[in-house]
Image 1 (tube, one colour):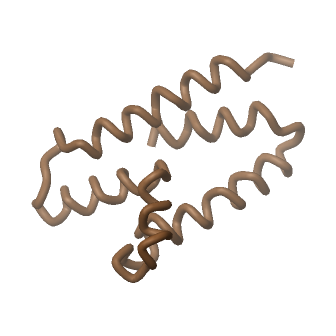
Image 2: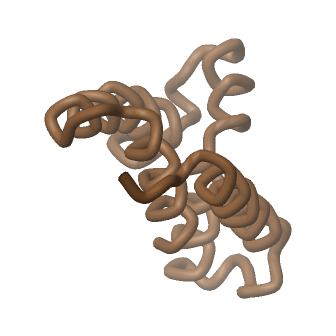
Length: 101
């Protein structure tokens, strides 16, 4: 959850109002949810959309949670490193963009 919180802080740093931040989060979150496997299995997507979904930060988080629930992966899976990478990226962007006004 920290990875997505940091990405949210980074997005809030570039928007001027809370309403704009909310709209931007919804505009980014809905396609991410549709493509990452939250709402339906990614096997139903076309090959192009499936390759696009690999680049999204929610996809490794969903894969990791699904694997942990089903017992098919461990906490030390590559998905954990990917989520940690998104956390580091979100922290770096937030640190770079955030200012107290």
